[in-house]
Image 1 (cartoon, rainbow, N blue to C red):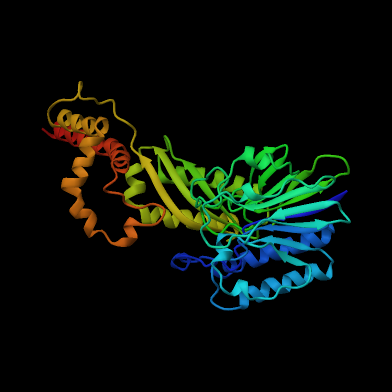
Image 2: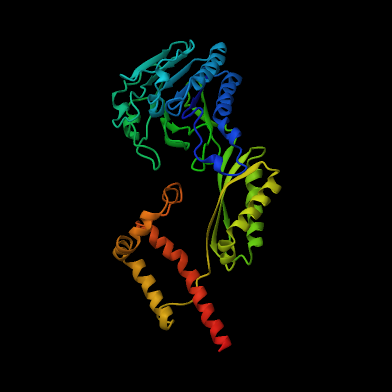
Length: 426
């Protein structure tokens, strides 16, 4: 029996983008998080006395500003060398962008696979053969695995590959491959990298992404770590996910449906936050609060955003003893839908509802509206409103359609209320 660690996408010293603009953000803690998680990986390897460590690409985050990142990595590799634990590495797309990586001398026992052609490292004392190839440039669009050698008889064969596999949203389509193609090589285990979410693509043979070891932003949520793989004699390998992260990101949904007031929404937030803290004991958390649902308190939430944002931040700080930081607060609420339709409404309201329905049912009309009426407005928007994870996509008919559905109940509510008020006073 032997054990090894499979990790990928370390992204040491990954730069933080716009994090400093959020008041109270634990910037220093997050900036050091990738190093702290990597130290946890090295400590795990030593404590578990693993036979070797596999790092399936993207140690770094592109070219370094200086040598400190590389020197730090070398210092951690010396710890594994002193523990007599070999490390096998394939360079990923981000590593290929680093000029310094190509020149930095690594300690004995650390092997980076060639980028010219697939290579094999044989560990005769374990009867293990590891096959791999590094990226030669930041963008590889061909299937590297197609040229990998067949499995070596009498060995436990491992393939290391930095790949998008069959393609994943949010990840560049690098070194694409198929599950059938990988399985055809006859390997016992495929140690993949590049996709930052842990995922088993196949169970026999095991083809698996471990995910990255430390979340760096809100698109990398949940526990992050590595796989501890145990290979019993004459049995199939067994994988165990081991968390390594030192700070964790989550989207925290809050259902405001039918809430009578903003304070009731706060109470629901408390319940969800308590659950999140209990599920991640002792772990510093970064959360994005997303409040959604049809509620009569929608106008109060939307028009009093700053007040309720501060209420939420104060509540989170109090409950968590400042161990949870709110990265952003999103309001996706709406007013309850009124029982009003073009058939039952009259006058201007009927006409307005008909316009809404026409735009909803005819994307061409929305496209025409965007092109003729809104293009000038879009050109005047500052770049920060057209970028990021929640941009204003005025020229996108789908985005406009969703916006119309969002504001329709609010507009109808206000119009009906005004008519009722006029009726009461006339």
